Length: 220
Image 1 (spheres, rainbow, N blue to C red):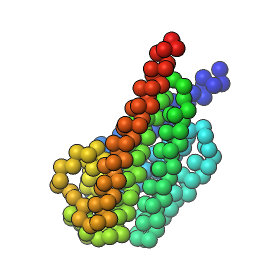
Image 2: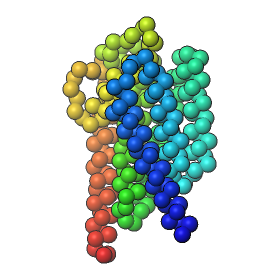
Image 3: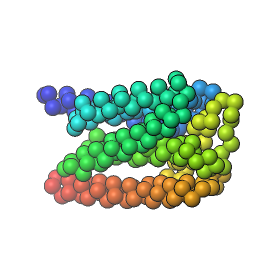
Image 4: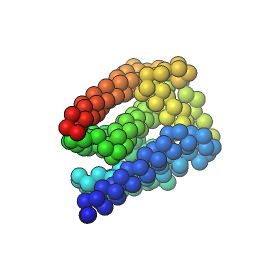
């Protein structure tokens, strides 16, 4: 009974986390630009905590790391310190990649395809996209002119966040409309990495899930 209850708790947290990820990616960019500098970090903070709670493996370490990164994020925002914000972007990228690898390890270690596995697969896909968004924002701030995005200096030079979200996920899915393009060698190399990573993830995870489902069907 304890295991069933625990599984349901993790499932509920995973569903809530996936809903928050969807809100971050699809709803937040529709909000006024003046509040996005606070909305995006708030959503990222919630995602870090919920992903950490949704995994039993290394749970204490994940929660401690989440709290540390969230603190650095908000220190950078409240102090408007460019260095702290740049560090927070790199830490976000590294931590999201770490969480992604944990999710993939959990998926690979399961013997059957359940709702939790499907949710984890979708969550991991979006975590990789969010990780690349963080590194795109870092690149844009570190190397001015990396992308043809107009910066509103009245608000803040980090403000075109929704444009970078849009660019990252359009590149991630290899859609590539061409309205926002990388202009520097570093940002172009990053664009290639983003596009290739998105396709590799889909190919690997789908192959893994199909294989597990086939084995599950044979056993039953």
